[in-house]
Image 1 (cartoon, helix red, strand yellow):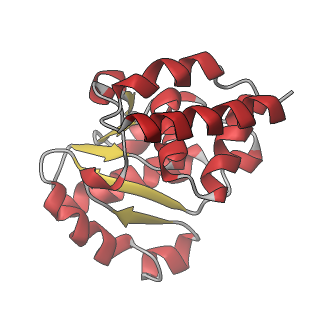
Image 2 (cartoon, rainbow, N blue to C red):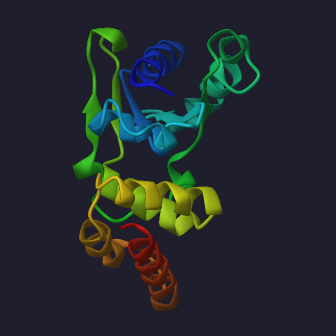
Image 3 (tube, rainbow, N blue to C red):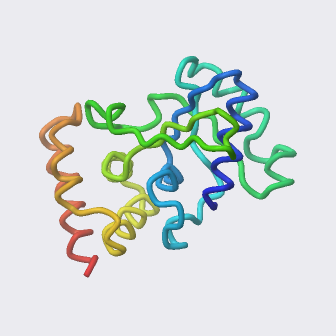
Length: 177
């Protein structure tokens, strides 16, 4: 996905949900901070998104411009309507959101996860593709391990889970030259 694709999704989702502010919590949130990141970080064709003022309208977005919709078939990318509970995030993540709003979004705003919050979310998910994503962020120096480490205590997680996340981050740090 390219930044212009994410802008298109924000514009379409905002119009469909009649919501000026949308929250982008998936990997493509990175495009708000880094408009042209390395291609390995933009392989996803979906943007995880929900209306900030009415998360329940995510289903309308998913049904209208989601996977296998005419929108997806036409453009090759789509919106995945999700809820706020989809991602495990550190406290105060909303204060670090990166706003994506320009003429391409036609007044609608994408409130996108910051790279450190995105990395914490991906570490918490723990899937191989998520760990590969964080590894790419580190390898391309779009993120410093210390930025992620600093947010781990802000998770509402048991001590054992925090240890697992720190170990995963350490492994990724070693893998990224």
